[in-house]
Amino acid sequence: MASVNDILKIAKSVNPAAKAGMDLITSGIYNSIEIVALVVELESAYGIRISPRHIDADHFNRLESIAELVNMYLEEKSAGKKVKEITLDPSVLAEIGQLESAEQNVSVSSVKVETSFADVAQQQDTGADDFRLPAEDASVLDFVTNAAAQAPEKLAVSDQNGNRLTYAELLNQSQAVGTYLAEKFGCTKQPFMVVSRRNVRSIVMVLGVLWSGNYYIPVDEELPFEQLEKLLELARPEAVLWHYNARHDEIFDLDADVNIYDDMIEIEPDADTLSAVQAELGYDDPLFGVFTSGTMGRRKCVVKSRGAMAEFIRGFAQKFGFTHRDVLGSKLALMFDAFTKDLYTTLYCGATLHIMPMGNVMPSDDAAFVQAAGVTAVVWTPSLLRSFVQLHILEEFDLPSLKKVLFVGEALPAKYLNAWMQHKPDALYVNLYGTTEMTGNCLYQVIDAPVETEVVPLRDVFPGYEVFLEDESGKRITAAGTVGELCAASRMLCTAQLGEEMAPEHFPADAAGNRYYRTGDMARLETDGTLVFTARKDAYFKHAGYRISPDEIEEPFSELPCVELAVCCYDTEHGKITLFWQGDEGQTDALYARAKEALQPYQQPGAYVHMDALPLNRSGKVDRAALSRMLRESN
Image 1 (cartoon, rainbow, N blue to C red):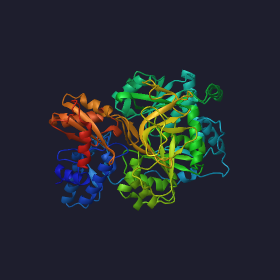
Image 2: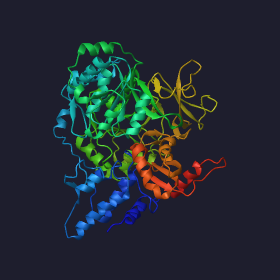
Image 3: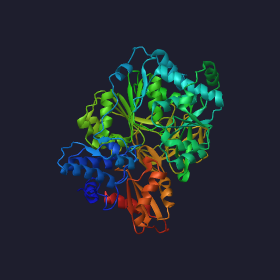
Image 4: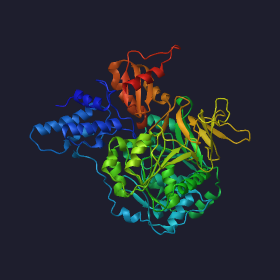
C-alpha cells in the first residue's frame, strides 16, 4: 500500500522544501507546478494515469487524497485485475466535491480535449481578405457591429463547455441584454457586477452592460461567499448579473438586484433605445472596473474608460499584426485585467476567441487544445509559459499554428523564454508591462534573439503613454545604470478607484499639470534605454499575474484562535507562496479549511510551515527578511 509517507517522499523529490507531515498544496490556478510534477512522479512510480480533474486546487488540497487514489489502484492490481485506469467509487468522488450525485459512475484517465473542432474550423474560417477594420474613432461596441456586418456567420467566441456564438449571435444577444438593462435601470453610467465563470454567457453580459450605457465589474462565481459580499459592499453596483448555477443559490441572498441571463436574452433588442444610449457616452465614460489590492491590503476597484480601451486596442492590434485570420486562445480569468486584450483585440480584428479550460487541466492539455483548435496567438502569464518548459511540453507538441506569444502579469526569467524560442523560432515573442491602474500596457519589447540578462527587459513605449524613472526626490532619472521608480503618464490611466481615493502621492501631476502614475515597481535604466525590472518598492508581489499584498493572505489566518502569528513570503524563482505560522500545530487542518473558505485560488499558499516561534527583528516585529532567507536556503 502507498502510504502518505510514500507520497511525501515523492513530494520531497519534486520540492526539496517539503517536510514530513507538510501538505503540498497547489499555488493557484495559474501555477500548479508542484502538484503537476508530483503527479508525473506518481504516474512514473506506480504506472498509473491520474486525471488532473481530481487534483484541482478547489478539491484536492491534501496529499492524503492522492495517496487514496494510488491505494485504490494498487488494490485493484493486487486483485489480479489488468487495469490501465483507476476506477473510483462514486461516493469517494462525491465526498471530495467532484460529483453532485454519488450515483454516477466515473472512470479516471488522463484528460483529453473534449471539444470537437471539425465544424469549428469552418466557423472560424478566415473569410474575405478585404476585412475592413473599424474607424479610428470607433468604440469597442463598434468593433462588434463592424465584425457582425462583414462576417455574421463567423465564430466569434467559444468556451470550454462547447458553447459557441457567431458574430451575428453575439451582437443580437448582447443587444438584448443591453435593451433589458437600459429599460429597467436606464443609462446611469453606474457599475453592474457580472458574476460568472469563463464562458460565452459572461461575454454577452459584459457587452450587454456596455450597450446599456453602464459599466461592468466581473467577479468569479467561485469566490467564497464571504469575499463576494465584501466586494459587493465596496463597489455598490446598481445590480448583479448572473448566468445562474443551481449550486450557487446563495447568490440570491446577496443584498442586490440579481438579474438572470436567461431572462435578459429573451428581450427583443431595441435599436432606437441603444442608439440613444450610446449617443450620450464619451471617451472618459467608464467601461469596466477590476478589483485589485489597495493600501494596507484592502481591496479597491480600478475603473477604466471606454475611449482609453478602444484607443489602446487599436494600437495593440496594429503593432503586433493581429488580423481577422487570428485565433486567440485565452487562459485568463475574466476578472483579470489582461483578459480585456484577448476580448477586445478579437472583436476589433473580427478574429476568433477560444476561452480555454482553466484550473483543472495540465499544460499538456493546454498544448493539445492549442494544436487542435489551430490557435495562432496567446497572451499568457509567465507561470504558464514556464510550466511548458519545466514539463517538457514543447518537446511533445509542435504547435504549428501558434505564431504570436505575448506574456504579461509578472517577470519571466529569460531561460524559459529562450527555451520557447529554441523550440518555436518562427513565432513572435513580446514581453508586456503594465499595472492595473493603466488601460492595457505602457511598455513592451519584441524579443527576436536569446536574452542574456536574468529577466526579460522592456524598452518600447505604447502609443499614448510616456514612461520614465523617478528618484526618491521625485526627479526624473536620465543616467544609465541608475535604479528608480517606474512612472507612466497618459490619458489612458484609470479614471476612478472605488474603495480608495486616488492619492496624490500615487497620482501626482508634473510641472505642466499632466497626471502620471507611480507604479511602485523599481527598474534600472540601461545605456540603450532598456528598462530592467529589479524589485517592488513595497511589500506587494506578483503571482499568477495578480498583484497581491501579504496582508490579504495573512489576515484570514490571523483570525483563527489556533494561530498566534501568520506571515507569508513569496518565492519569485519558483512562483510559490509560503505561509509561516506560529500556534497550535495540532490545528493545521483549520488553516486548510480557512484558506479554502476565505482565499481565492491564486492566493492559496503553496506550502504551510509551522514554527515554534517566528523570528523577530530588533523592533520586535516579525523578521520577514529572515524568513525569506530561510525560504531561499531551503530551495
